[in-house]
Amino acid sequence: MTSDTHFAGSIPSVYEDCLVPILFDPFADDLVARALSLAPTKVLELAAGTGVVSFKLAAALPNSRIVATDLNPGMLAVASGRVRPSNLSFEPADAQSLPFASGSFDLIVAQFGAMFFPDKIGAYREARRVLTSGGSLLFNVWDSLEANSGSEAIHQAVRRAVPEPKPDFIARTPFGYNEPRQIEQELRAAGFDEVTIERVERHSPCGSAVRLARGMCLGSPLANELAVHSPELCEHALGAAIAAAERAEASAPLSMSALVIAAR
Image (cartoon, rainbow, N blue to C red):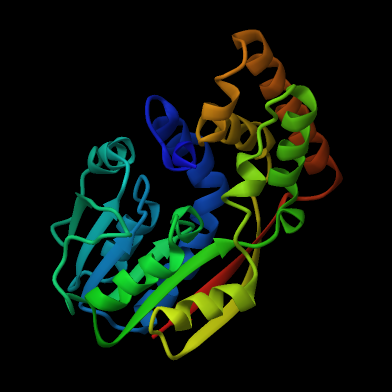
């Protein structure tokens, strides 16, 4: 759905404030360490969002050129608002149709973006096109919703709190693409010969429940689904999400699980 890729209005700033430190920063270091081991000189980042991976890549690879792209101008505006090093640039780009010449990069990185590609094989084929011979595609996607306790609690709470049409963004898109066999088949169909997939587990920082709930409800396209309901109902859904996340965190640290994929 188009709304699933629409990060606009106040969503980017809430995403940066609430979701980046809770969900994305813990996995960014893992992805950047893997990128560093490949010693790339020209790196393209897809679905860069507000730049959590972008800035870490630029710091870890000071002699490499990093081009970070995203489909949403609002996300790039947040990223570009920070002081950035000379080896990092931000550009709008659609992963389905990249505005770069063939063989332009030796590494492509995407953190939690592939789930949003409408035509995943097409996007992987575009990545293969702009990679040099022997270049690598490195990305991660969320594991099952059940393996991510805070996000699952919020999803279930919001669905209980809201009548039809019930929000389903969380399960449908960010947590809707995690079958290793399917991912490998689609990468091979796009022209990649070597594919490895590894599960990586983390926990959200202690005390994350409220920010995670606010981030999901107000800083993701779930906000677009909630917006079709009355403001009062939206507030009720947010309250239910916060309470559910707090209950989940009270019983155990909020679990997070992702799949990390490397292809060449």
